[in-house]
Length: 268
Image (tube, rainbow, N blue to C red; front, top):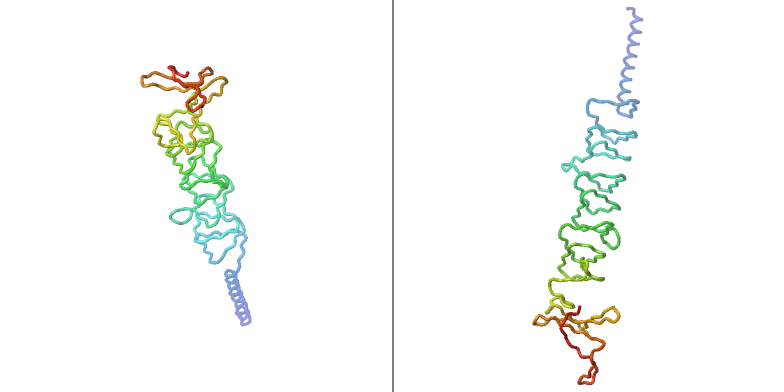
């Protein structure tokens, strides 16, 4: 090779080597800086990102595992969502808002829950106190309240238009309106003693009060009086009533009165 040609080959070869070195340096610099790729990135191994990553499009995770994740937009989970803890429960420090209908197949435990509407197709069990959000704190229902087992009411229980086959009360029963049995007669019957003004009457019927005690027996019919019926020791039934033709008499203290006599026979 001629001397001039050798010099030109060395000169041109040196330029090529320098160009390759500069290109490699630029590629390495671009890797450590910002990189924009127009197509998808596929890797056979793990993709590790040490800094904060901002993803503007739809992000799909398949079998994803991470120690921390922050999203500014909505998080949509196509499968089951669970924490990495042993319990597998989902916990939030803020408020959990559910817009659509939620179906809970297992046991749902609400602790200090506040909601405007809860619908349960199965049994609704409350371990603590149940109350409405109204100021009265009373429990109200548009339908029938059915109690299967024994219920203990410690406060005052007010029953309006109640219908029941049996009610057992260990304390006093106060009726503001009329009390009647479910029989056709509408009479009040008792197998024990009936006491008025006392819980332990000394007789079958007794009255007790601080003022004058009055036994009132009037009829709402016209020209109909009242009758007192007693049974004698011999088994004979006697009645006492005041008729319009009964004899008037004067007592020893000058008061006018009618003579009250018992005669055999019943009042009705």
